[in-house]
Amino acid sequence: MKPKKIKISRHDKSFSNPYDKTHLKYAICVSGSAMAEVCSANAKNEVTELGRQIALNHAFLITGATTGMPNYAAQGCKEAGGISIGISPAASEKDHVRRYQLPTEYYDLIMYTGFGYSGRNLLLTRMADAIISVCGRIGTLNEFTIAFEDKKPIGVLEDTGGLVNEFRELVDKGYRGPGKIAYDKDPAVLVKKVLKMIEKEKIKKKK
Image (cartoon, rainbow, N blue to C red; front, top):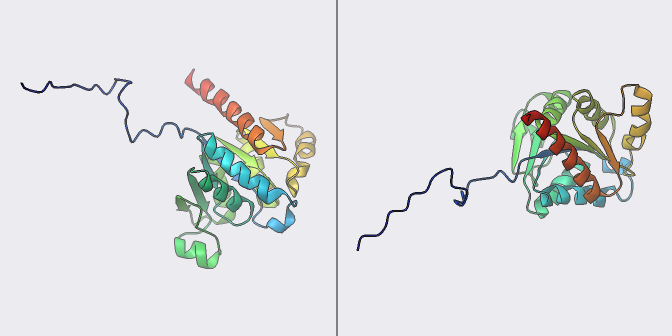
């Protein structure tokens, strides 16, 4: 007997494509200070957990490929089996490591922009569906305001120190409305809030 030929349509939903990565459909940027010493005592653990929660919720992480808070998020993401992408201010890996003295350990891919910190910040926020701000300084504020102007969903991990503790007041004093901002002290809860905001944005784009 000749074996029966089996036809598989590409439209057949029962066919499993091993290269289908559609479960990684949202990109979340974690923006925070490269200097951990300016942050609260619990910030490292909270931000590491934030990275884990991003991975566990099937999103992928984008950071500025720097030390401190972004690197803790990348560590948490990779420990949970997630995908971590870095956007570097440097022009090459050599420049990234030697000149800027930035890490490479917890990244699946690093994009070398050569645009310095300010140019990197713009690309970083534009590539993400949402950003989550954690303990930060002026650079974190810069990324926050870019995302705010772009009307992107923003999460703020409160009580992690630095300028993020002032973000509520800064938004109130900015007289530009509340923006699309979720605040929370719990990384798991905050990621869920941010994902809901992203989902609303995606639904609007489909209509």
